[in-house]
Length: 137
Image 1 (spheres, rainbow, N blue to C red):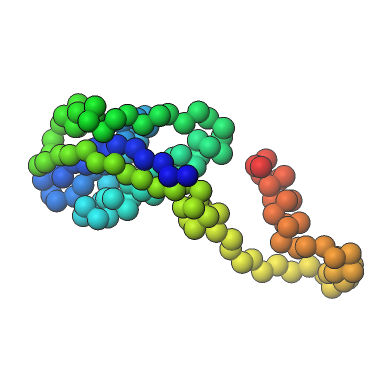
Image 2 (cartoon, one colour; image 1 turned 60 degrees about the vertical axis):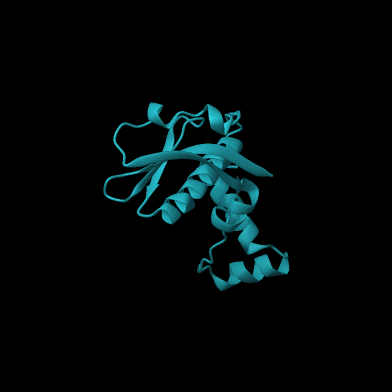
């Protein structure tokens, strides 16, 4: 599902861009160029909404873009504008947050043989054990 939030973009005097999401507790990021700032805004938005969803916290509704006043958010800038930033949080998470990494581990041969004979999925078992140890779901 696509999430769309208004974001205030501020071009700094040094050419960098600051980005603030007024609806999301003034969540902020920046980039050296507009393109980088937009990429960072998408990443920031996806990460914030993903965390809210994971923690089962109510996700704020986005404001209408024309109700946002850029002058209320920041003081010093060369120019400012409001634009919509959109992201499919679930798809973004699959590509960036839920990426699997390969790990190499060593166990005694006899233990490996027993586990293989019982058709134990090593990756699944390690993930479950780590989640339990770290108290995460």
